[in-house]
Image 1: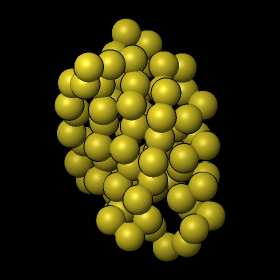
Image 2: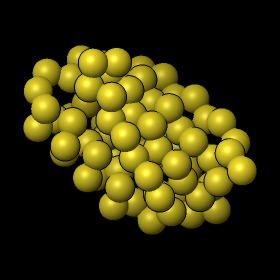
Image 3: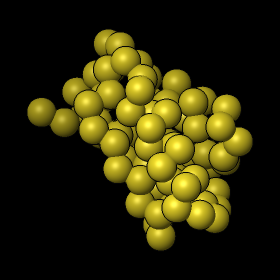
Image 4: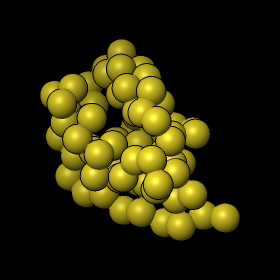
Length: 76
């Protein structure tokens, strides 16, 4: 398992946050998603054998939001 931290461009409304959270959560291999509205970040725990952090970023950009940076940490 790994944790992706995706730094986003401006989030302008809470409905944006909900849309992003649902889209990322629906990806195969994602077990937990938190969107930090004020920080402009998405944190997602995921199985690297099923999905990559880059793929999660692509899901967000396809919704029309900017992903500025992706960081991945291994978790136990």
